[in-house]
Length: 364
Image 1 (tube, rainbow, N blue to C red):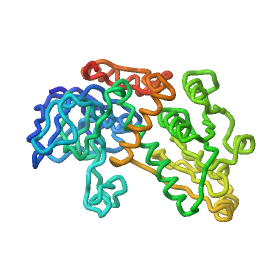
Image 2 (image 1 turned 180 degrees about the vertical axis):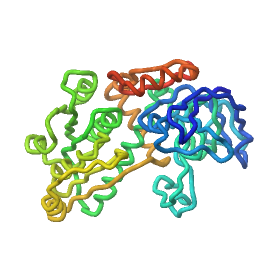
Image 3 (image 1 turned 90 degrees about the vertical axis):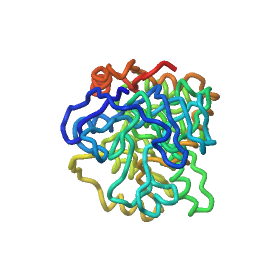
């Protein structure tokens, strides 16, 4: 079968490769699910892997099949699979268990192991291929009515986990009913965070630098949120303070600005993965004092386990009901066929207004 792969550690090696198609018998105990891949989204992680910033090939290979934002249709299942059947639409989770206690209880996204296993990212092949096979434990069923937007589930889980963790942390307060939220950044994750917070009934302000009107600002306002181009500290004076701030800019100095805009008993969720060694000067005493006296929390979130994938399915379904067609507008830049991997990465590297770039491996 065809697949798009890179050679980890060597920059700009994305290429088309051929390898044997998997079978359900590759998974032990009759728990295999063979999936025909329909769509795979790409994001900054794929770009960084191709730039050799991180990522390792699975043992026995000198290449890594990329792609962690999957959507496909079940072709065959093992004799002990009851959760899905041939013809079902599915998405696969990304992180695979290691050896820590968190891995053993199904929360492998919270692993304390130094070495982690992620399909399409580190030590496990991804989904940018014609087929993949995996254990049914890691396969999440998608309703047929969501097939047009199912490829958005994996990025949605980043948001689901971060927001769910914020609510879980705030159980310490016994009564916590957030009303105002801010989202930093209006890219794919920022848009999805805006959506999920709106579905929860919060007043949401999304901060970004691009002057409106443009597609992203239109999408934000279409679901009743506010789009602002001003700094968040100024925005907090105008529209805050904020009970939840979801940071999704990829620009670390924004974190320290967001800390100053957070209201008492508020939660700041960090989702950006920032490499490099950028340094900024911050009013450290003022920030620290505000957090201590205001009982504030800052938490990082990465990856997601099955629980958050299932949450995402429910919210995507609710979004389609409340805001018909909104999710489809995020799918701005399709590329047809694995063989067009150069076009795929060109659109990813030079987005030119793209929200979600994805490969149409097969027609829906």
